Image 1: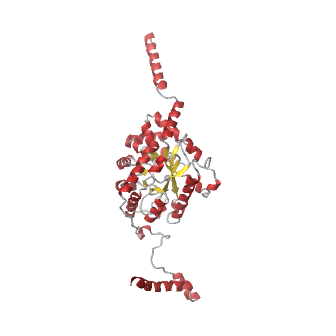
Image 2 (image 1 turned 90 degrees about the horizontal axis):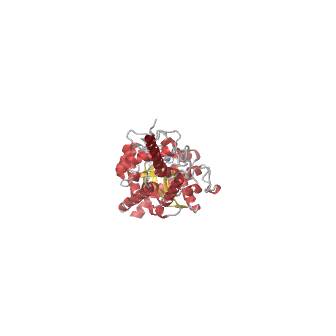
Image 3 (image 1 turned 90 degrees about the vertical axis):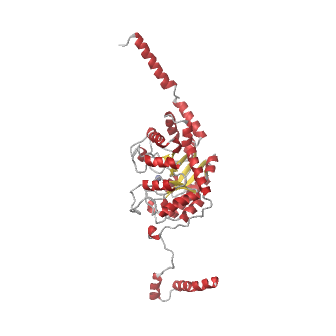
Length: 428
Ligand SMILES: [Zn+2]
């Protein structure tokens, strides 16, 4: 039993605890006001969104949908605006099954789709520079290629994608390319003894530095990530990956790589997908925030961003089901004593700093000519790749013997006969 004096002290303690718990902390309504004010001041730039993939499933028929209230995807314009999103990296993604087939055409079609979408809706705006992303009052669209198989082992194709507005590329998706290794074992393409990055892979990294493209290591193997982090002159990003220590999935980033990333000055943009934040279980806002806390502990808030992966997977945390829900995460991080300055970085400033630096490196390399490195034919040997040499037309020989004189064969023979003569005349 308490004495009278003891009871008074007990009451005093209870009142103190009450005051600390409820008076010293903002109420939930002021919390959301504080969150929304912060987010309107620092509109979010998200590192990875697969809306273009969802639209591909609708045959890229933009004319058939209303993107303001589209509900077959997690992403639509009304939701983006409700969450104060100010920039979105849209993935031009094509399946690994298109590797060595029509990956380049399919990627062009996805770039065309993103460009049309961002042109058609006045709330969206295609951006190709950090300055444009920083200054726009619209939702900036930055195009990224998801998976190096999209360039078909060609630096010329990489450069032409840049001309079309692509400013970021993840070196792999769930398949190896002939020059870089994936974190996934799903596909059996291009298995090699020595993995990581081949000489051609190093040339891709160098050319992306020269062009001013963000190198994205989400989906690559640890060996590839290490080699790129050692080689790249510019900071790199993991556009949609989370912490391996919190959830030991191969798509997540272990602490030793995070320390390399800190040294590189780069950024990890946290993926929300249940498979990566709760290792397949049902996550919630708190589960995602645990990744942020751990990442902050290991490499500091200035190297963290958000790369939700909305529309790239099914299964998102309770409370973070679509692009209108980002404020729930920011509110949770505020409640975990993340400062407004740290969150301004997470929301957009960290990404812009990295993009600025990538452009600075591009500027220092302005006198470096475009790379003419080509992948050795043996390394990218597949049935769809043609080695350029004088054509052999065995079919025509057969036609000649069976059907007599072939007009096409005559033209071909005449061409090869006249070519040396033409050369002599020109260079005499
Ligand atoms: Zn992905």
